[in-house]
Length: 90
Image 1: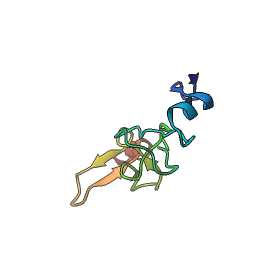
Image 2: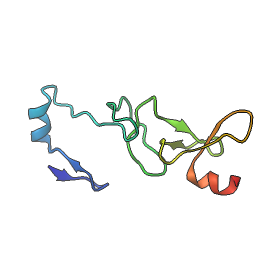
Image 3: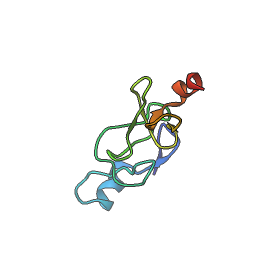
């Protein structure tokens, strides 16, 4: 096990190939713990996201996870705001 740049434990290449015969270590989505199917990461916390958990900020268009995205229900339609844009919308 190694400590990754975000402080999480990651498997070394030797351990990953022993655990997964395909040689590819699956990464879990930070919001729902499904296997990540793409390269989407949250623009705020930089955690990996699966395709179903990707939310796009209504203000700036950046990708936000369910933890960093704020859902504004004040209008007729819901809109997702990242933490940076949420400061200016209040």
